[in-house]
Length: 289
Ligand code: DDH
Image (tube, rainbow, N blue to C red):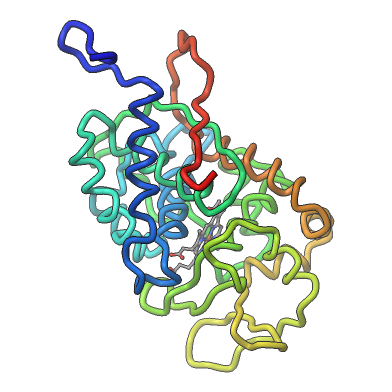
């Protein structure tokens, strides 16, 4: 067949599109899972394997899929991501030639596109590593903290202020689970659609500290059903961050463009792609188009 040379299977664009389609087909298979889609938790998995990257040492990042192993699977920040890993396991069984590292990132790419987000160009080439490559705990952001912490964490990965804000727009998606992070609730009214609503709500709503037994989080005064984390609020209390929140709230097309660029960068942190790659990044066709 097309991808078969000397008994070694070399997957082509069409093969990756098949994996993409197999993921897309199952995103909404369980109506009672959260808001009806595995999309948000797949995005979070892709982000948490990428966001361990440290530019000084070149360690961490999506090349390795070390979250398969303890201790990384047990890091507090990764609580609940077993749902995403288990969701992708049957896909791995069906397409055993793809590495977990490439599959988990493809899951994030697929989820963003299928939830009506921008196109995320994709390059395969990640190799799975063993448990010795697990990153130390504490590399992912702690939602209880503020602007200094955000800069410490994201500058370590090589991002700037604009990129921190653009990446944070991912919180248009999904929700917090008291059983996972301790926080509770969604950020927007459309948690399975990529929008710039997160930025609009940050600016337009009045946010007050929620009165409850859980960790400190904010609720909107109008519906009291939406939430913001302390790290989300830091994006409007910090002047340099806030100007980008304002730009993205006003201009969804700008947000989509910058989100695509910065997510692509995130997903490729620390990945040594073959320099001889002749074909450019893959652009998958959404199944919804
Ligand atoms: Fe996040 N995030 N995130 N996040 N995130 C949570 C959920 C989701 C922080 C904390 C939390 C990004 C940045 C930050 C998504 C994507 C991204 C939850 C709730 C916490 C807590 C987990 C749970 O209880 O299930 C903090 C802190 C930051 C930061 O400091 C900037 C980024 C950069 C992304 C990204 O994808 C680019 C998504 C999606 C979710 C929803 C998951 C779900 O299951 O639903």
